[in-house]
Length: 91
Image (cartoon, rainbow, N blue to C red; front, side, top):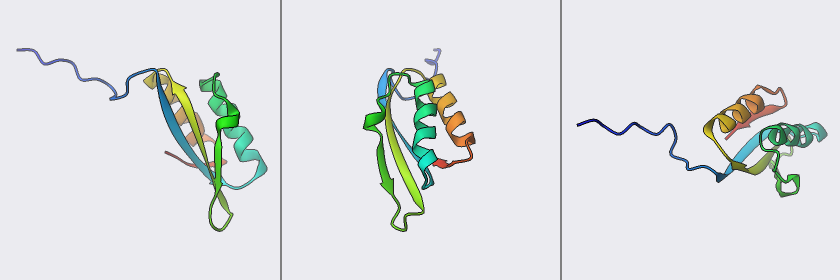
C-alpha cells in the first residue's frame, strides 16, 4: 500500500501569515521592511504594519500580516529579510 506524499507545508494557501521582524530602532528599518515585503506581497497595506519599541528603546519589532500565496513566496521573503543588515531577527 503506497503512502500519500507528505505535504511540504502545513499551511493552506492563500492564507493570512504574520511576520515579526526585529531590528535596531531607526527611521530606515520600517521603510526598508515595507519595501521588501511589498516586493514579495504587492497587495500588502503598509498602514496595517504594527510597530512596537523595546523597553529600552534600542530595538523595534514590526509585525506585517501578508496574504501568503505559496511556500516559495514565503521562503524568498524570509531570505531577503534575514539577509538585510538592518534586520536582526525574523519570526
